[in-house]
Image (cartoon, rainbow, N blue to C red; front, side):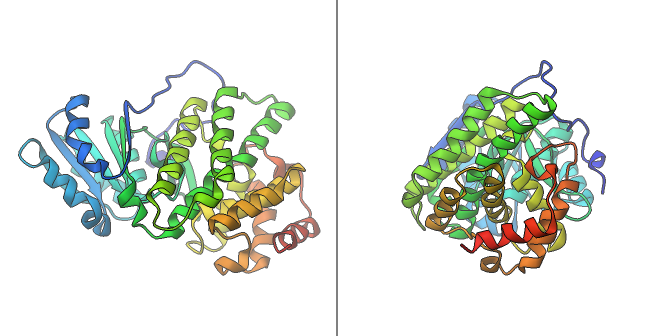
Length: 358
């Protein structure tokens, strides 16, 4: 499936003038879903709304959102399926004629809403029910292109409402995966700086600084991130929001996606659905930090403290698959230069995997 079936214009930023769009409202905290009517009143985006959600997340939060809006707005609910050509088409057809979209759910739901919002040029509000990755606020969406996923340009939300009580009820594995995704920013920005030095790629120091800060937030507070803890969720969500804003500033996913993500996409192609996106990127970040000559042990320990996996065996992936993914990673997004594009032998890849178990 080609990216053009969704939209065009997802090239790397060249440093030319561009619009930077941020959400007008970001509401994070306990029981803040109740703020939805107030946010809508302030935004003044019309009276007809389509809520895009899933079977499970409808019961978790979408039904409550409908009840809050009943009598004031015309509200329809669309249950999204897979993010594929047919799924996007159906969601787009459901969104025709409405003034505003609201995505309520996890990554698949939010990304579906983003793509439809972009294609129809309609505003949308992001209401995450899990904190598994940094797509809550970014202008990027993850879609399947053949085997594995790809990051494409999308429309950022005009508002984000992150109810930490709702997100805290999601499986802890999702939160730990979101943490790993953010911590992997450390190696993403090193790769970005490397591409700037070696190839002269455009770099945004502002976006880079924000991305680094978000990773530091979680590494420095790893011991505070525990299951069922709304305060931990608050910390993680704020980091995810900051990471998404860094991508909006950069005009690409560069501040949060380097060799560790290329490796992650290679794993997804080899064993689709075997691990969460953030989990495999976290493991990749340990290895890429070693290649950069940085403090890979700090990343490894932070992930362990949070409860994210640090070895392939913890997520049921054979070491041989990880070796193969390391060798194939250079073929993922070849236009994006990273440390792994400098060459990696099979023997070196095997040594990297053994490193994970030390």
